[in-house]
Image 1 (tube, protein in one colour):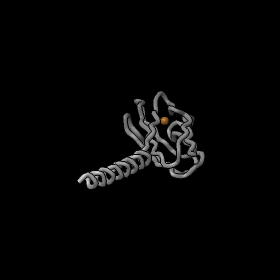
Image 2 (image 1 turned 90 degrees about the vertical axis):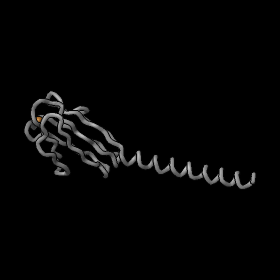
Image 3 (image 1 turned 135 degrees about the vertical axis):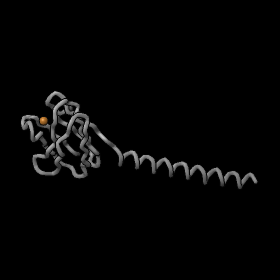
Image 4 (image 1 turned 45 degrees about the vertical axis):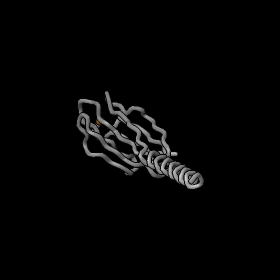
Length: 112
Ligand SMILES: [Cu+2]
C-alpha cells in the first residue's frame, strides 16, 4: 500500500509539472501590450516587444484616430473614443506607423 501511494504521488507530481508547463505556454501566447492614443500622440511612441506579442491600441482621445502601418502591414478602421485595434506581431522587425487622419502622429513597434 505504501508503494502504491508513492507511485500515485509521483504520478500526480508529474501531472502538476505538466500543467504548469502548459499554463506557462498559454501565458506567453496571450501576451498583450497596450498603446494608448491620447492628446494626438501614441504612448509609448516606441514599443519594443518579443515576437508573438499582441499589441492593442486604445483611443483615449475625444477625437477619432487611426493606426496605419507605414509599410502596409496593418491598418485599423477609424477609432472613436475608447475603441480598440489589435495586431499580433509574429515576425521580428521594425514597424513604423502613423495616424492617417493626423499624419504627424507617428509611432514605432520594434519586434525582437
Ligand atoms: Cu489621429
